[in-house]
Length: 214
Image 1 (cartoon, one colour):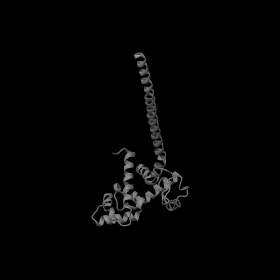
Image 2 (cartoon, one colour):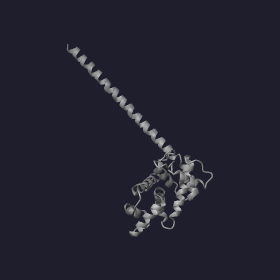
Image 3 (cartoon, one colour):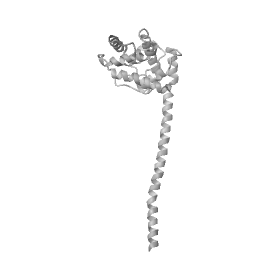
Image 4 (spheres, helix red, strand yellow):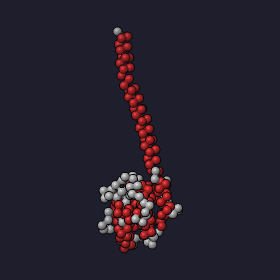
């Protein structure tokens, strides 16, 4: 009797242990699968993030010269669209650099080689070309070390808005620096300043990641 009880108890214990062993195997397989998926996603993200690098390099060199860091415009592309060629905003801006069709048409009218707005190469080229116009616009008033902030802010909010903000900053004793614009932004009328300030910060933080600068 005691032997049968011991045998039955042993069988119950063995049976009870089987699901636990199966579950641990499933969990282990699931963990491995998750790790593989994450690794694949990281590889794909890296591949996507580098896909347009030659285009950013090409048109940065063409419109800004070889000394200008092309990664500024790649960071801008991240801020605009996440580097998605098919991105379209609620106001109709399109492509990687989120250009309005009217703006693109104006730019393309001076560059007959430019194709449709939705082609990544021409969208990036037009965006950087527009940046060059804004860069030159701030040449007289802003030092080179600060000028990229004003260029990108103007791309987002329009040059008239940022000119008005700079005027308010100067009236309040501020310097011709982006930090002055950040301080007086809430007092500038008819400006969605939080959007523009956030936009410039996103470009700065993305650029820092791209360059490895903390």
